[in-house]
Length: 170
Image (cartoon, rainbow, N blue to C red; front, top):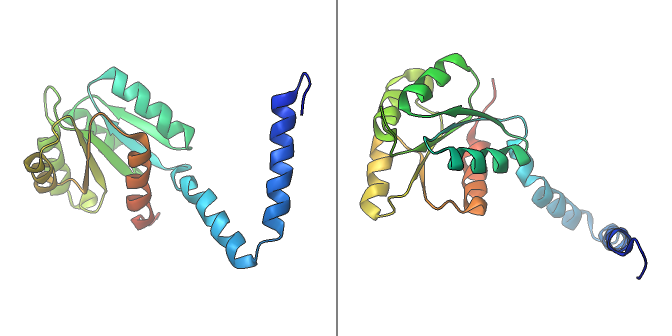
């Protein structure tokens, strides 16, 4: 396939070919494909509270989450995280950095968990500390799960898929 629009034409041809192949699959296999393709839609319209003091992390994570349809609220420390949870009623999940000025992530998670409204709210701790003991400290402080920096975006998406289905929208 050559010509001025070769990349576009190639994409069209491949898409057509794949559609033809899929149409010959059993309904069971088509259902499996649909489920795999739709798994990232779990973030569409979901509110994620991202708490981090580093603007670079906020920029990178916000871009990755918004690309999947999430609505991102940002807090720069533990105090702002608690304020955001009070202001924005429908936060679905929290991504909490641990080392922040003012109130760190450990204290913020303890305070969030002390509030009955947020006892089941999924919180993923994000930290540069990657030792086993650090993970245990995060879980003791109230984290639902743990993610070490530098953040592997695919691993983040996997964790979000694990915790999002457990949420029931009111």
